[in-house]
Image (tube, rainbow over all chains, first blue to last red; front, top):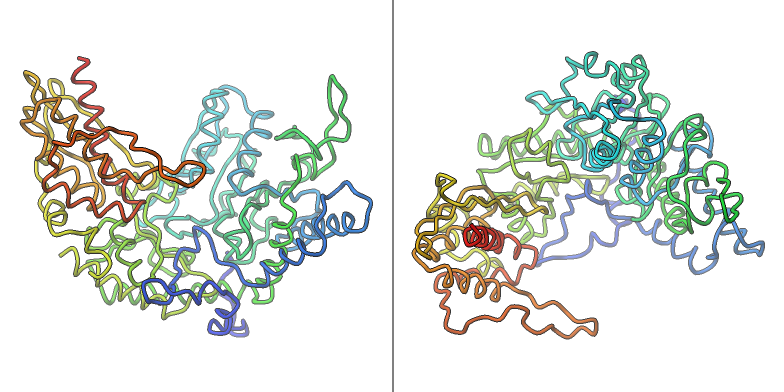
Length: 418
Length: 158
């Protein structure tokens, strides 16, 4: 993640921006919606839903097939979205940008295609204990199928990756998988440092960018990634679309993942020839409207400026850390680093021993939406010594008043349970 | 708290704050059965001692929300001293109270999947009925009961 932007970074006008998100006018239990669960899924502006509706109402046809006008237009919009994504993340070619259903599918693609072609019994890979299940389970499946060894980078007491043993751990591994930002702790990881160590050891680097790309400029080359995945619905876009970027030289050598229509250039009764990149990895009718919606979300974010988005979230993070610790002191435990520069806009906490489920239920009475649970990171939960956490996460449409609403609502939980 | 009185009844909060039969039994001879709620990470461990067809002792361990922990506490009080048959009838009655009826494809409710004995008295456990209004919390309330059912199965099989 880039350092906080300079003085000339425009400040987000959140009051004006909120008007772009119709859902924020909803009232629940008589209170205006305070949406603090964007790490699970963001809301979307009318610009995104309009782009998708306009496509369905004026242009829809299947892509890569018809020669008639709207089929050509649909194909141009779908492939235009791919170019938009490629520019946004600094890909060298559209051939490196694969549309997937979500990051989970993208990571399964890498595990099943690259993994099965390049790993064998006894080979080792390195992950971290901070990973989302999506970057653990596909590799555990390979462990079961192929007998590979999985090593893990552990955590420090303040919720960062413990890189003190990195050189030893990375020695001899063929792949390193790491999340750019923890979906539980908000910790921003030093991906470049890890990627450099991995490359020095001859390993390929897979980066889970789910919690980075929505919140800060993404430059896949600067990060040192060989594969990098992110998803649309956490960055103001629709559900059902994700991106897996991969270096062309790697993708070109990999076998297809899913088989079917669109991913072939020829099929005979006894065999097939795969299509060129990127379509080799896109079997079946793709999520066309979703790709168009994702491109609209990128336009919207680029208008705001990703440096401004990061600066805004850092400001709200600093405010939240300050307000919550000042009001609740030792009654409130914040998991992860306490320095706003080291974290994204995601904050897991424990409050007076009240179970996160109960906290979330009580906060909902004031229309404050926070997530309670293990956040698909059970190994990390065990590492923290908890079964679950309450997690608040903010985005471009949240402001200090939303944090105040959270802080006020916590007092209700205290009144109820003590 | 307005809107949540049905969920957080005083007796539920009492069992949450002061859980009954909390602890462990030596297993074996006791049965030790674990239950997990994969959605939220709640865990319950039921230790069950059955002698001469009766639940002679039961202890509860684990961690979770007020609903799962109070339900486990109330369950342990309710089944202690009961015959295995009575404990099973109680499980059926409790799960009957907790069931939101699955819908048929045409939207009408399914018939009761679990036959419930009319003469089983739930007593204090009826306080948990309010959970039905909060469907995502039903699994919290039924976690310990499903775990107990597993422990009874194994106790009878052994």
